[in-house]
Length: 220
Ligand code: AP5
Image 1 (cartoon, rainbow, N blue to C red):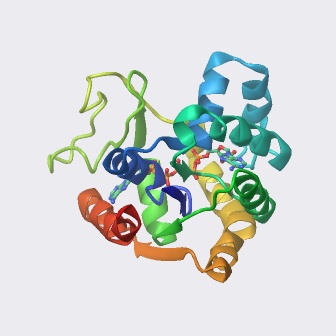
Image 2 (image 1 turned 120 degrees about the vertical axis):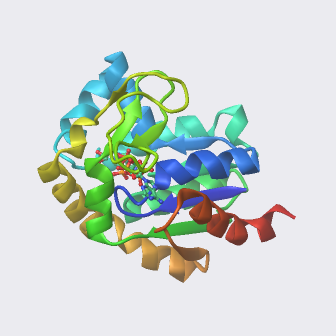
Image 3 (image 1 turned 135 degrees about the vertical axis):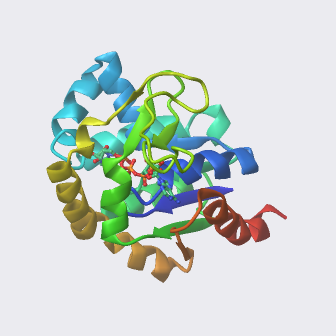
């Protein structure tokens, strides 16, 4: 299966991608994660990407597309993949379509995660990432109802940190960038006849179940 997840920052793409990819035994490919790994590693790509990411802007298309082309050409992605955070502009979507066609492939489904802006801001202000295993969690939602914030990962006990681009003013700019540059993908993929929107509010497991209900027909 070849799937794309689209939705605003904080819609839960990364959270859902890890569960869906595990259910379907396909690799989850997150451009945000690849850029962040390059930033941490101090690579040339990371240094370039950081200039854009810190401001909440998109990394230029040619850089992002070249990186994704290399990743999709790897053996584990040849039989299917789940893309999280790519494409993010219409030119990226057009190039992805051409790239897959060159390999005799095409996308099966684009899942749009629908949430409103207030929920996005609530989610991103509390988002934390584990420095050890990379899992994403939320300092308040995952307190087990105690209301206390948590600072260690519930999966592996690693230290949690806040992403640099989750500061309030950067989040607001990322939302503007989404509306201007990424939201047009919704009509792009609707025209292609492969877009399905799901309500991405409520418990994480229920959203995974809604997504799997849309994806199951393709797994037979
Ligand atoms: P990227 O990492 O892709 O960021 P994003 O799209 O802004 O998405 P987020 O990671 O912020 O949110 P998410 O939807 O994954 O939500 P999450 O699951 O974490 O990109 C970062 C940057 O890299 C970009 O700004 C750009 O600079 C660059 N970049 C990346 N791809 C690019 C591309 N293609 N082209 C150009 N530049 C690119 O959830 C958020 C929080 O909510 C978490 O705390 C989570 O625990 C919580 N949560 C999740 N689900 C629920 C729920 N159901 N109920 C309550 N809380 C929930």
